[in-house]
Every structure is written in structure tokens, then in C-alpha cells.
Length: 350
Image (cartoon, rainbow, N blue to C red):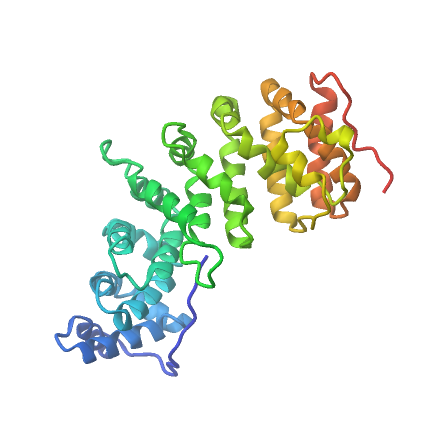
């Protein structure tokens, strides 16, 4: 969960009466006084004692900090950092959701000239850890606008440059993982009319590991609905299979005999020397996604149609991580005992 470390050294615990006085300055008419108060509050959120003290006054702190998010960066930045730190406490995150913090954050996020985009996205990661936070972001209470916030975030995630050092929307990947843990969230992401999952899957080519993990985690969560949503998953198979199979294909250059049975987007990548994916988390998520798809007969047929079992077999031969190997073997067992016409084996000498 995103956390911003303290920037101010608060050596002593602030006494309640002092704290009450400090909090009253968050709404001070003087910009200098207000900034000083916000800076001190931000510093307090960097320590356990400070956080504990502020949580006792959260009914005052949360609305006051939210009111200054719209101000100049020198004030809005420490305010956003303080809210991120406070929102790591589930009780405080719930209070933020209850007072409409997700709407506030989204409104400011898409206001021209917002200088705290990255911080607002990090705040949304924390606020979508709960079902209430997810419902607020999905806008499930209003049929006319439900999904609008999510579509905006997906568009920004896919449109923002990954070549810059400041990838302000990279943490949207974590929001998508949170959203896809929720049934309503998965349904929205998998809706072919909205086309969101297709956009998200195409981000798997990113060199940013945070983005890649966000994409792989979101795909995996969506695949839990493969029994009812397989058709919608396979609608984007042109992008889905490369995202799932290339990370587990190993580092071998594949023979023309093998690649001739694969679609171009996979065969072209496997016909040349390449750096293998060496992130066990991403590999396991890809393999779990494939497993969930191949639990369905139509899913198994789709995997055979891209020569997927051969890719898994050769990838398994190169693999040394026990957890990743176990995930390969789970699919191997399913394919051997499934209704496939050919044999897939993970029985290879190690």
C-alpha cells in the first residue's frame, strides 16, 4: 500500500489541546499559517504516535485536508501525503470514503493543472482496498454515470507515457487489481462494449514493472469469472494470449515447426533471442490465468489453437523457481486429463 514517509521531524507527541489548536489553523485565512499547519500535520502522519493522535480527531482532520487539495501545490502536496498516510488505517480510509473523498480526488485529478496527480492516484489505491471504496469508484449507485471514473482512469493509464521518469498514472495498475477483486468491478472491466480490459491488456508490453504487475494481477482476477465470461475473455485473445504466454515461454528460440502453429503476435516474439521474464509473481499470475481459462473446454481448445501447450512445455524446461514450476504442473495435469487430443507433459529432466 502506498505510504509517504515523514518529511518533518516531530520529536515529541503533541498534546490534545495543542493538537486542537493546530487543526484549527488548517482553515486559516493566511496562506503562510495554513501551509505551516498542513506541513506539521503531514509530519505527524509519518510517525505511529502522530498518526494515533490525528486519528482521534479524524472528523476534523480529514475534511480540513480535503479542502486544501484544490490549492497550490505547496499546500496540496503535503495535504495529499498526509491523507495517503492516514488512509493506510482501514478505519480512516472508511471515513474518507464516507465523506466522498473518491469524488473529491477524481474531480481534482482531472482538473487542468493539478500538480498532485501521482499522489491522488496513490490515495485512490488505498481507498479501493474496501468494498465500499470500490463501489464509490465504480459509482454503482447511479446507473447513468456508473463506470465513468473507472473508464477515465483506464484511459489515463493507457495514454500516459511510460518513457518519462514521472509516470503519474502507473499506480492505476494497483487500483485495477483492487477493483477486479470485486464481482461488479470484474463485470465492468469485462464488458465488451466498454472495451476496458482490451486496453489494459495491451499495457503488458510496458517496461515499467509496476504497470506489468498491475496488468497481470487484473487479468488473473478477471479470469476467475472464466466460467461465465469466457466468451468476453476470448474476444481479446489477440492481445490476451501474448500477455499470458510470453512471460512463461522461457528463453529458447523456437523452431519454425513450433512457431508455424502460432499466431504472428506470438511466433514473431519467440523466433528471436530475447530476455526471459524473471519475475515469479508475474509468471505465476500468468499461469494461474491460463489454468482458470483452461478449466473450460472451450478455453482448452483456444489454448491448443495457438500451440499454447508447446509453449508451456518448453517454458517449463527452462524454469527453476519451485512456485512457478508448480503452476506449470497444475496446467499440465489439467491438459493431460482434459479433452485435448494431443499430450502435454511436464515430465522433463531437471
